[in-house]
Length: 175
Image (cartoon, rainbow, N blue to C red; front, side, top):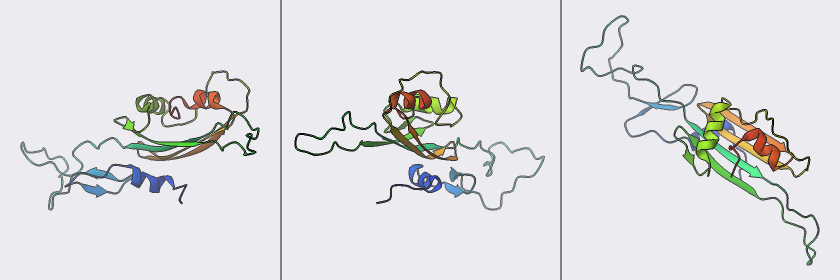
C-alpha cells in the first residue's frame, strides 16, 4: 500500500479536472485555460475590435487551486497498562481529510477556518504562537501534502501534545 506520494504527484490526484473544451497548459502547476484559436496572434499596440474573440492570455488567469491531504496520528491511548486479557493498548489512530480552498471545501470539518489560517500565514502550516501549553508529552504526528495556491506543500512534524498542535497550526489540523 502506498502511504506517501510526492506533493507534485499528489496535486495531480487532488486538483479538479478541467471542464470540457478547456486545454491544459504547462506552467508552475497545471491549469485549465481557453483553447487557443489557430492563426490568432496579438499585435503589440493594437486595440481590440469590439465583439472579437479574445486570444489566449487576454483573460485573467484563474487563482491557483489549493488542495491538501492532511493526516493526524495520535495522541496515544490514555493508558499503557495491559488489559485484563493481557493485550496491549491499541496504537494511536490516524485520521485523514482533504482540504480545498478557493472556495473552501473538501471533507475537512472546519474548511473555511483552515483556509483562512493558511491565507493569514501565506501557506505556512506551522507558525509562531504565544499560547502556553501544559508540558505533558502526548505526541501527535501530522502531515500535509498537496498544493497551496499552485505551490507544492510537503510538511511533516511531531508536536508534544494536542495543545501545541492547535497553537502552532490553528484550524488546519482541527478534525
